[in-house]
Image (cartoon, rainbow, N blue to C red; front, side):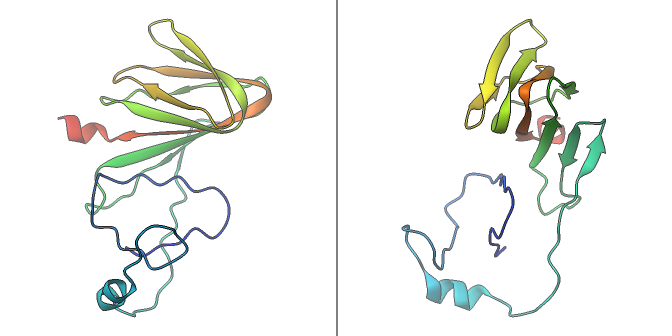
Length: 150
């Protein structure tokens, strides 16, 4: 699936794979002839995921397609001193703080401070609550869909 980052924030989840074909703008191996042979040259509007609102501060991005059944991403956007819960999942998750600061609290009583640029591991089944600091907080929480663990 050819794609490019154009503007704004981009969080991409993908399975382990060695089938990435690059054509440019990277110091990694570029295989332009293979990429050209793979393209269909059909035009069309891009599919833009707008997500589903889960409460006031959480938006769920989960493709409605059998083509990408593995992952979901939740974006937590809180203003100064706001708080919210982020739904737990059957599998582990990774939380990436892209702005502001805050505290993540787990259902077993643990708490971790976060700020822009920090990445946190969230074990399977842990319910999270997020408390924003004085700057507010932006977090992306990525994990596998529960259906993969059934």
